[in-house]
Amino acid sequence: MKELKVIARLMDYPSAEVHEHVPEMKQMLLDFPVLGFALKAKICAWLSEFETTEIMDLQETYGGLFDRGRATSLLLFEHVHGESRDRGQAMVDLMDLYRSHGFELNARELPDYIPMYLEYLSYRPAQEAENGLLDVAHILALVGARLEDRESGYGLLFRALLEICQADITVDEFLKQAAKEERDDSLEALDKIWEEEAVTFGLDDDSAKPSAGQAMPSMNENQQTTPVHFVDSSAPGVSINP
Image (cartoon, rainbow, N blue to C red; front, side, top):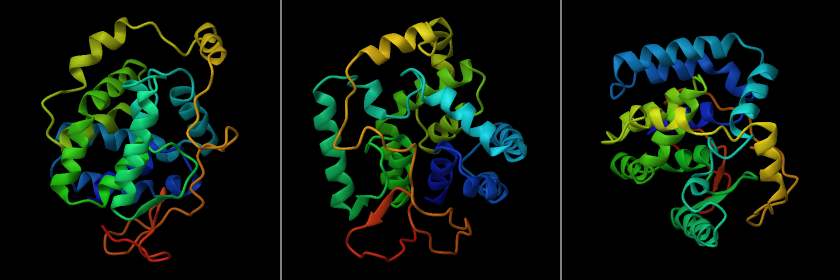
């Protein structure tokens, strides 16, 4: 499901390569029949603004949204297990799932990083991909609502994911909750978070954010593309075409 790969790219840390290919990705989402007209119109408007914004400004905005506090974290298990020991086992299980289908991580990210999870799903059969989204639908809806409460267009990507899997839960159901929550990205809240012990999962603490190590491939659906976050461990050096 190539649309999941497009959303994964847009949800990842803004790069010059992604910025360059926004028109192609926009068109692919507009052509996707599963998404409703109203949502497509909003995504189109947001991506048009995204396309004309300087890359450094996009990166600064991204950092402010996703790197300050935990409420809008793009780590799935942050919203399920927090800092409990169960989080470590969940990471191991997810890594095993990736490896069971021939994928090895090719980026310095935790395995529950949402863009990485979406990229994995983009290579699975459509029904399996939809079920994978349904498994985390409540997290997608909550994070999407928090992003919309902060007036961020990134929330539209979470709406799109919920429409793709036809979830019976929506971003709208969490908007009131998000509006009542105390923001965790203030200086005071951040100081409290940094006082807590950082949790790592076999990764260097000084890893860059994020590092794919590969250029953005053409989004032509007929062209083979290499995953940004994965390599195919079963056939090294061979591109995988979803």
